[in-house]
Amino acid sequence: MYIETMPILHVILLAIVQGLAELLPVSSSAHVIVAEKILQRHYGGLDPTDPRMTLLLVMLHTGTMFAVIAYFWKQWKRTYFASADAFKRFAIRAIWASFLTAVIGYPLMKIIEKIAFKGASKAEIELLFGRLDLIAPALVAAGVLILIAGLRERNQKAEPTNLYGNSVTMGQAGWMGAIQGLCLPFRGFSRSGATISTGMLAGAVKDRAERFSFALAVIITPAAIAKEAMRLVKASHEAAAIGSPIDLHSSATMGLLGAVLAFVAGLVALKWLSAWLEEGRWYLFGIYCLLASGVVFYLHHLGY
Image 1 (cartoon, helix red, strand yellow):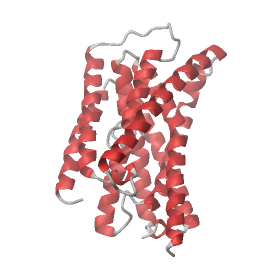
Image 2 (tube, one colour):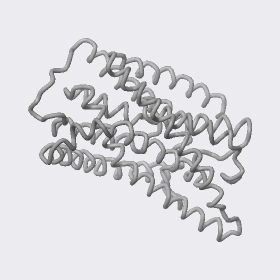
Image 3 (cartoon, rainbow, N blue to C red):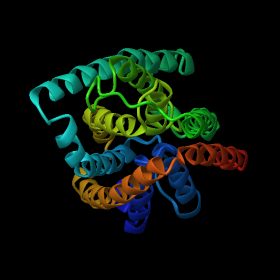
Image 4 (cartoon, rainbow, N blue to C red):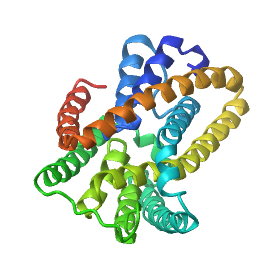
C-alpha cells in the first residue's frame, strides 16, 4: 500500500499526533508509531518501518521544526542574537553539543545495527523503530529522567547566573548534546524530555535548558530530514527496479498537508510546554511517560 492511498483523515490524525507530541517531552515517535499500528491493524496502512512512510514523517518533522523557529524566534533574538558576543557564546555551545550528539549517536546506531542484524544483508536501524517492546522501555527511561529532574526542580530552585548571559554553560551544553546522541537510536526516549531534564540536572535554569534544547532540535532536524529523504529515494529506486514505482508527487501532496497541520499543532504544544515549565509541573510529563509505557507494553502483548 502506498502513501498516496492513505486516507486524508489518517494523515490529519498522524499530523496532529506528531505536532502535539514532537514538542512535548513524551516522544512523538512513540505516539506516531502506536497511532500508525492501530490504523494499520483496523483500517489498513503502512508499517511504521516501511521506507514509503518516511516521506510523510519527514514532512511532519519539517512542520514541527518551523513551529519551533516561529515560537522561539523572539526569545532567540533577545538572547542568542542580542550581540555578536552573545551569538558567539551560543554558537560555540551549540557546535559543541551537536558534535557530541554526532560522536555518540552515529556510532551507537551502527553498533545497534550490527548487533540486531548480525549477518543480514540489509541492516537499517529504522527496521527496529516499529517494535513496541523496545519503545516501552525507552519511555520508562525518559519518564524516570524527567521525573527526577522535575522533582529536584520543585525541591531545589536553580540559582541563575549572569556569568554566561542567557546561554547554558559549556558543561551543560555538553551533557545535553551527549544525551541527545543517546536518544537518536531509540524511539520512545524523548529528545526534548531527555535534553531539558539533563540541562536542569546539570544546573541550568529551566527556561535556558528549554530554549537551548529546541535550538539543538532546529540544528539536528535538517540532518534527520536528509537521512530519511535519502532512505526514501533509495527505496524508490529499488521499487522501480522491480516494476512497482512509488508515486512521490502524490505522496508529497499528502506530506505538505501533514506539515501544515503539524506546524499548527506544534505551536499549541510549545505554549503548553512552556506553561508547564513555568508552573513547576515538569515532573508530570515523567509520570505520563511511565503510564504510556504501560499502555505500549500492553499493546505489544496484544500483538500490535
